[in-house]
Image (cartoon, rainbow, N blue to C red; front, top):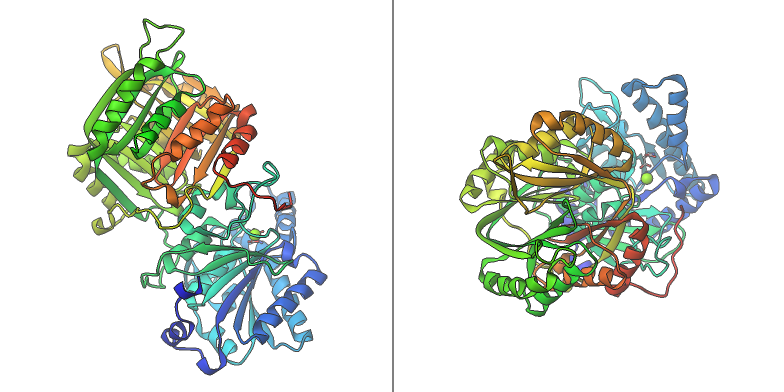
Length: 625
Ligand code: ASP
Ligand code: MG
């Protein structure tokens, strides 16, 4: 592993500021709130920092506020105002970290270790002027380097910065932001690596409170980590993961209480990206397309456990690798399942689907409802990707609006945490890509298909369960450009974050207009109000009924090793089928497959899938609630 890291000496020469004769490695260590939650813990942290320094390293430490200090400060503010001024909020919240840096520096000095504390402003962590959610623009390293060269440990306040020269306003980066501070500092200082110390032993394959057999991962790629955001975000903030990926900062998540090695978060080789505008403000950093795809759809398959398992099991036995898989919900008791494959294997995929279709006849209406296979060759898959879209409701809407403005009709939609993929007509691919590149300010040369399988990575790294979502479906949405844009634009305007979006295959002509259903998931708390809001506009926009189901669970598998490997989806569906768990929706990206199931079966689904991919182990991990 160490061989992949930039050579410490070389990195430091390039940085040009640090006296090499004194340095083994430059390490940034970050300690979270629990790790510095009391005087005793601060002293224990000081010991660890001291040991690292004595081993011959330079150390920059980033700390959070002690324990639940920040929550306490938020509460105080809310007792005075229901809508506190954001500038004053930053003034208030930034004090938490200032307490910790002073105390930790004192604790280090007590050990005889020269140390100095610095606020974000003193370091020169320059951010946008956006109070309470500022992004880092750049970090001045001179003052830091000077203290490092004098043999001091520098203790920096996480989560805070200062807006640029003229203003000098204290800003904060948003809750959980000290991870971001630490990785940004590591990038700016070209540190050899960044250690995130926390109260869990690292990243686990799933939530051990639900699956006692969950195991610690040795390593995970940044992209996998981002797709597992719902599992890992509490341990490592997605913005920090994105900086690590962009600058190739080796990152490790470890426990503050033990010497166990923790989980390495692996980045691709750094590409010499500029340290100006360090946190890119744009939500999308790639537009990808693939024209070498064909679509196979099975219409009207029965809505019962085991159907997807049977279909994709047979497909896997034929060694056919499927890319996108989409299953959405429909009126009545049948589903459509659509998937894409690369053009050369289309014939084989089609043959499998055709062979299996008669066996999938809907038992309750054997005559009326017969599964039917549909093949479409001239399609392209277009995706936008980027960690910046997490929690930003408008990004998918902007993609759909852009495609609508370019008069591109969307045939299928599938989303994951950091990606939105649309299937469109192949003849419209160039136009769509160009429009998206303009809209998201991406250079066209970046619009490549960047995903290739990683050698020696497990098919599935981790499994996540999300039970806090509700599903909405809109029936009979007219199938023409602009409809998805209208829908998701409305949601964005109302600040409703959409998680999974699925627009499936079945097209029905009603009143002379072809129509499709669109389904998506939102946070459960937004379910009712979203339904109400959409119901109000449904008639005017020519939509059918709006249906809400709050009793759902989303279970996902993530693994960079699944790219190009047949059979992964089949195995997941098979695990669900064996437990008689019905799959209501399916959405995929290159490294993620998500299924919506009923809420009461969520935990069972998680356990079944975790076991099916051999992720279980015997070591027990306890994580704090
Ligand atoms: N203290 C801040 C918070 O609680 C930042 C952090 O801990 O990462 O959100
Ligand atoms: Mg934190």
